[in-house]
Image (cartoon, rainbow, N blue to C red):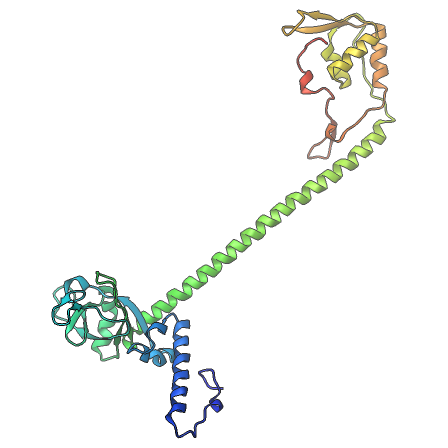
Length: 333
């Protein structure tokens, strides 16, 4: 297996016909093009141009850098050619000429860009020229090709620079690509970690809620067994005292209607102050019969529901009052 990914044995090297050699070169060139694409330089559209010819060099590791062309609006780019009767527009893949212009009053590092040896398109951007000018002056190789001919407007044409003169830019680009890949990978990892954490938190809350429900059910069951055999110890108000029905409600933990039935069973009359929606209280005078009725009701087994159980952080059990919020107003029945 060769470096370009195919078996040399597949090629008849003893074929006197040049067709075999052409097929081999075509395979080598295609492999180099794919390598360039993998490295970020897509030459598939300019495969059979001057730019396509450098595919093997780029695939072998020669530095390259793609840049926009500056100053297109000031020179011959996009102007109408009376002789050719067409606009001056370089084609993708065309070869360019780079000319140093150290006497440029605006930039001593200026590098002019020419096409077809007589048409000045523009110059390299100042930031690119600042890096390339030094190696270029030392004689390091730097070839230029049109990567995108543009639309005829400023900053629309792009060039590919190939050679040792752009190694610094090439390595800077590689560092940028690597750094961006690492940042994207880290961002994906953070996103995945957030998703895992959200799922874990949600499952944790569900698990805690399930444990709390099971624990509450066990406590309710234990409370039912225990409280069914233990009477509620209460001390009724003294005989002759005038109390509100709310006193019996809070004493026994019952509703307004239940407190009223207890009083009625004891044969005690209920005195309602200002009947109707403006009533301010329902009063009853405590008798011995009412005291006995209160004690009798307290001795009954309690009916405990899960919603009647509250648990504090110290695992202390408490029973909610059976009186509902709807019975809070002191309205006579």
